[in-house]
Length: 470
View 1: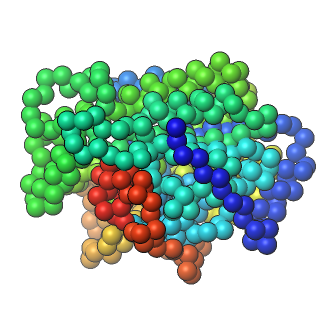
View 2: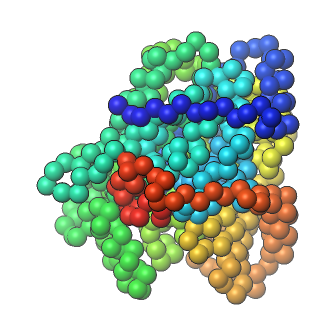
């Protein structure tokens, strides 16, 4: 059984104009709003999904969503690690505004959240999640009626004993299905956050050998193994190509395992006869590097392998099946879009763009092809701006920004020189001007403020010191 947290309502005096407009729209709506199910796959790279061009990994459930709905070919996260990225998705603002920037920072209290806005519209709101980085200590339970954690209560370090893996995708989906079977009569918003394929890369059989049966080297995908490789890379000793290939094969096995569990969830929606009245979204919080730019893991750069993520959306009777949208969109765009779907009216005033008309395929509907992301983990001070297929990466530690043409150099291996991107820098400065950092928004969490179960769970995911999460 997972632990269920009951969130407190934000005092009425703290409602914003957005909240008031959402409440008014709820009173004016005449048609019943759809259910909304948001399925987030932690650490899922864009190129790890078959419908997004991977010819190796089998992801029939994800492919089904794409076939029955809309695939965004160029969706971007707002950061390259879980906490700031998910905070941006759930608030519709960039990390610099919501304040969940670094290892110890919590999401700013009282800021409007998607769950809270949907609850004001009459939705029952719930989350089933398996990553402690978005747990109650970091401010993510606010707005949810039920907040159900499935990360391990403790981690058995003795490898001779089976480690507790209650947070894997099968158990996350089991709990989500149980919630759906007991769902209320009112429309629901359900966030399902599955942690696979986050490290450790230890998929169960047969997925552990599905994509690399013949390997006999030292790579086993364990946390000790993965972080040993990272430490060596920092000293300039990159893993052998064959070892990297096996590491990626284990990761791909976890992706396939997660997809099989997703298939069960989709099947349950069919069995309960709610699929046609449910907006279903599949996405990720960030990607994963496999030494394309000299490192592994995530949270340290803003290259494509870390911020270009899948985004699939199905809404039967509204989104025409099999469509692909090729311009750049952002996860923060989901906030105003889902509120428009739920309320029948657009009301958000944040930086996220409302994709409602685009979803319905209305003539001429499109948004500017742009995305912005930033990274403030540890000593990093990174920002990136994407306009069409041109990308600028600003790093405070570098003497000059990097610029890439993603059409000609999708892997970002050949920076353009000189940097021909004054408009990109201007666009980046415009984003930061319109999305200023909130004074006093960050709330650092002390080690002794975190429950022991959270500290142990973060260690299980490779965080070591629980105040040093990614």
